[in-house]
Image (cartoon, rainbow, N blue to C red; front, side, top):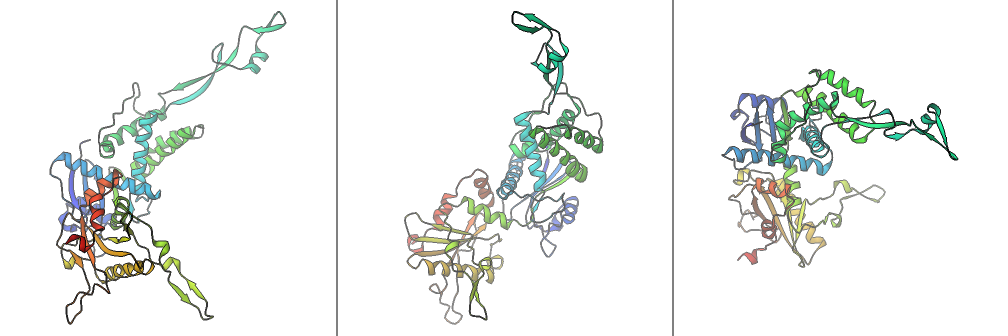
Length: 424
């Protein structure tokens, strides 16, 4: 299927979208707290149209090929992020949290990959035969005449069993119909090319009714013992019930709050990361009996820390999913104080190390260079008391490409570990 792709961005004003897209966004509550802007990165499928929502500040493509590539990149990112936690949530299950339609995406991908590996479902059964196949000695001895031959007996008629494969059955027809449908709609976006589904001799299922097809699949499930076949039939039933039966030709797949993905992608794509969370001091409470009770679940957790190889130089990095085009759209006091304090905590446990601080924003480039605390009276920058927070920008689409191909952002990683004296 050639989708008619329209590109939008996370945080676009809801009023700027076509009415059909607005309705889907509002129906699934994919809005910021104020309800005026979109809070969503992903794809909205409706009939032959797909609305692709890119991360904020992303550059839109112009050609149809580039639009297809961006749609595929978004899907692959969501799929990889979902598999990293192995707990996809779906809107079809009524579990709208951060990930929307994750079950649908995983199911469609798994069905297509299963077809690529195993082909269309085949029904295997055993039939009674005579003189062909594997001999059934107990039946042969009880039903056939034995003829003496020297000191032994021979049987001219051997009862036997033969395994046959029936590739054109109702389940195969339903499987072929579903695979053809989802391949036509999603294979280009998932794999970058059309997955050709061809099976000679397979006709349409005997019924177009979803309930009828589910009944056929459930009947087959009760007589099937192959692990692969059981999993496949269950997946086909789930598809008919939860996707084709519930959402019709509309489907929503994506992430509602993309800041979690932004943090995770940078953690996976920045080089020279180290885990220092287990070294940080724990918050504790002194009880009335003077015992001290620690609260590890309330402790500090640094998202990303880089260390220059063979040197005591560390960068405390916070992936901030902010517009960050100006001071007014930059992180506020809660984010600043947390970052100042994290650098201070790390310095406490590594007193001889050089500690740098950084924000990384989703934008190809921007005006913010660094964040500081200054004295209100003198205007002096208080770098000794508050470690400066350097501001860096990373193209969100470039980060996604590195994420899905398991590659490091080497240039950005090196820049984060450069101190001011090295820059001058």
